[in-house]
Length: 436
Ligand SMILES: O=C1NC[C@H](CO)[C@@H](O)[C@@H]1O
Image (cartoon, rainbow, N blue to C red; front, side):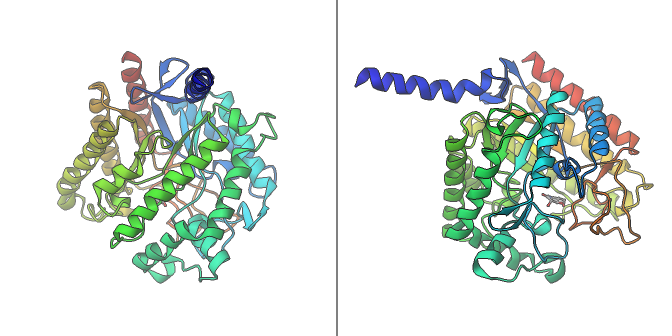
């Protein structure tokens, strides 16, 4: 029995550490490692990367290749991508969608993801793939609930009632039929064989992590202890399920940090404690959270930076407490004056990016568990198509998803000062990592 147990332990241990060897990114001593070397995530949010890779319909493979070449040239080594979307009647959601109805999936969009993975492999880049969305812009949890409870899919861009939207969305975590379909989708993608490379996703080191959802929250600001317990259990159970399908890849939550945890540090820590969640994530949105007014930058900058620096540092401290890496996988600020116009300057945003990068570099240089960052979001060659800056099917994709003005937070290929900042700091981050 002892021999059997030792053997089993050996296999389990080998599986757990296999990642670090076979080119997979894995965690070692609260940092990322790949092939025995420190790995720092110098990332970009590129939610529509799989859409561009589609062979037909929305696909623009020539653009995708150019965008990846641009990102690679900047020193970006990772992209964070929406892996699956759900068809919905909500006005501000992307179409087409991967899942047209439970059990029915668009093979063209899935082949788009395949093509993206293949192109990332050619450039030695990795991807974080999120498998759902707490928000409406890709259907997400709201659409699952519409399918399985018949509840109307309230687009909060229309209702303006985010508190109600968030409270209603939390029902997703306990709806058995919604969870069953969500796991069907997870299994379909995690167990997929790439039609371009013929490589099973499970064996593809391009994937840095499977992410439960984009910005999953326990409910709204009045989340109850029961809501919180449900949320923690959903994270642990779903992460365990993914790891049961794929022991090579890390799993992450997609959490925004305290802002997505009802400002409850204990909840944020509990949500990331399970060994099946490899690292912590957090996001930083000063304008969304009311810390900054782009139309009054001088009046609001100091207060915003105080809060932002605290947010940046306190989450690295949480990661230290858990002994896991942490990635700031979204952050952004408006163009000057709050303009959506690509011709508008980005002086204030550049200053914000510089502060964010510098703060995290300091913590990384001190040996703290900074796993890296990903700015929100790459607009590249995409351009807003309409005078009102709203997206319509057939328009270019940019960094801003359809629920926001196309130009709100995007970094475009013409934003030279922003591109230089990103390139300089991505290089610095990787240099810090290499020295440790
Ligand atoms: O995940 C997200 N976080 C913030 C982005 C900008 O508001 C938003 O577009 C996206 O839903």
